[in-house]
Length: 114
Image 1: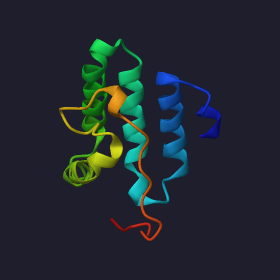
Image 2 (image 1 turned 120 degrees about the horizontal axis):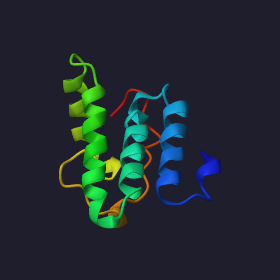
Image 3 (image 1 turned 90 degrees about the horizontal axis):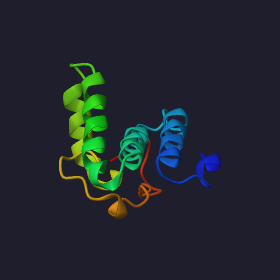
């Protein structure tokens, strides 16, 4: 993910999404990072006036890919951790300027802790 640091906008978020997906599968509490970065990449790839619609379209597409038996669990997790994922999992996504870095969990949390 360090290689993405000099990038900006959609390319940076797309690289972070790929890095997050590849690097954190062993930590359940980090599983939404790749999805959140992909939503940010979609929003950053379009003109500012279209970013909310693009982010929502990516979010909705992601949700359509979730197997039916897992969807309620994933949606609950998105709702619970939406605030640490730039609020990209809700309908009223804040503008890109309010989307800072994902806060890191407390050092005391275990892999499965909330």
